[in-house]
Structures are given as structure tokens and as C-alpha cells.
Image 1 (cartoon, rainbow, N blue to C red):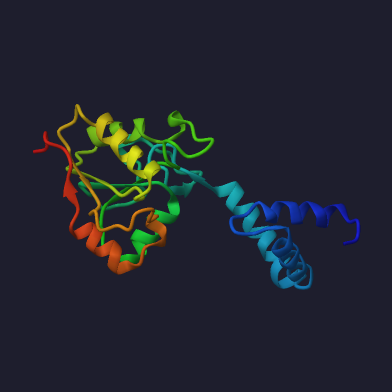
Image 2 (cartoon, protein in one colour):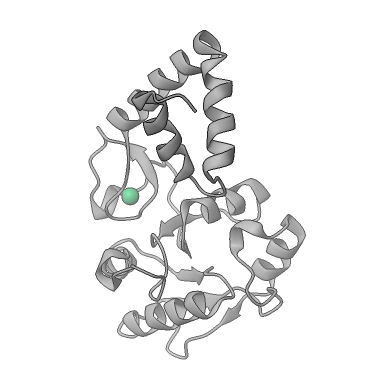
Length: 205
Ligand SMILES: [Zn+2]
């Protein structure tokens, strides 16, 4: 490879994306270079727009326009009011559940799991979940964390954090394949996991 700093920098950046190593990063960079006007120009524009305008909500963790202020009573950018919150690890999980059309309600995106490497418990949006549940007239919290050790530890920790609330807490059905991450499940498996979710707290209404 020629010694062009800009190209090297781009290869390094693209190699950091999920599933891509230096080899595929180089292929992507070549594709971009060969399509300056069709790819590089619009992509640079869209990336700049996303950086400027979109961020994660500090309360519920969903993506929102930066200009939208979040507060506990008006956290979701939705007109409709719901009485359920579905708690997931990542935005990709939210997207899978949304596209399967099996759930209508709020989402709460933790931003990881308690024991993921490099994850600090205080960075996960658990305190704000408890606050949402208490302030937003929520009837049911659905824990849709992965069927991994980390996901289940996180679900248990959330259940414990909500022990002073009378909200009903449910967990997706055990039929989830062990190690199954929500974003990788097919719609059928997700559907039955939601339909057969079980109540896991005793102090529910
Ligand atoms: Zn929010």
C-alpha cells in the first residue's frame, strides 16, 4: 500500500467497525475511492449530519435528535402513551423487536450488560429506568436481555433495583436459546419468547 496518511487513517478507522479487519477495511476504502461522488461525498455529508444532530437519550437510551430535550415525563419521542417498558441491552435489540412487530410500548436501552468487558455498572441506564418506572405510570417492565450469563446477571440486578416498586416484572420465556442474543433471533422465536414471558416478581399488582 502506498504511504498516504489519509488512506491509512481511514483503513484504521474502518477496521474498528464490528466484523471488519484490516483486509476488508482496505477493500471498503478502495470501493470508496473508486466511487468518490456516489459514495464518499454523500457519506461524508450524512456522517457529519449524524454527528451534529443525533445522540442517545441520557434517560431511555434510544436515539433522538440532539435538539430534543429529555425529561422523565417526556422522554420518548412518541405521541402515544404506553404502560409497558421493554428493557434491552443495545439499540440493535430494539430494532429487531420493532421490526418483528410483536411489541407495542416504550423501550429502555441499557447500553450493555453489567459484566461486559470494560463496562461500568454506573454507565448503564439502570437508575434512570427505576426513575422512569416510578414517574411514568408503568404497569409492566419486560426484561429482554440476552440469554447469556451477562444478560441474565443484568436482568437479576434490574429486578433487585426495582424491588421497592409495585410494577410487574416479566422476563422473556426460557425458550430463548442459551447464549442467544436478542438481535440474532428470528421473528418466530422472539414472538413466542414475548408471548410466553413469565412474571418474576412476587410483589406485582
Ligand atoms: Zn429518552
